Image (cartoon, rainbow, N blue to C red; front, side, top):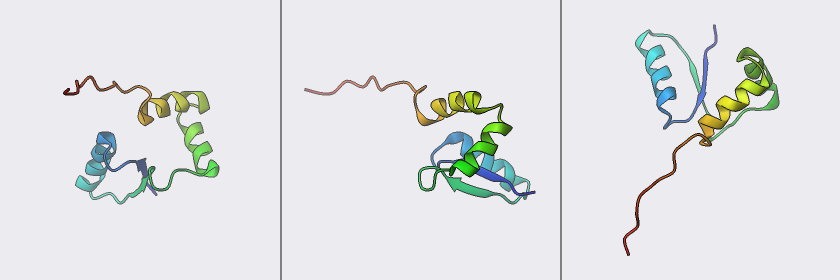
Length: 77
């Protein structure tokens, strides 16, 4: 079995996945989405395996930040 983790180095879910496989001695390959991204040939099978293009687009929107809260820090004058 060839396990690939697509994510970013700072993503907590990516870190959890890496820790899970490391603790169990399972080999995996990490692909940093900020450095490499996905080709169309890689993306389509992933989309199909995760419920189709529409569902994956919703998940990707949350992952890339459209679902994140904005900062409410006040700046000093």
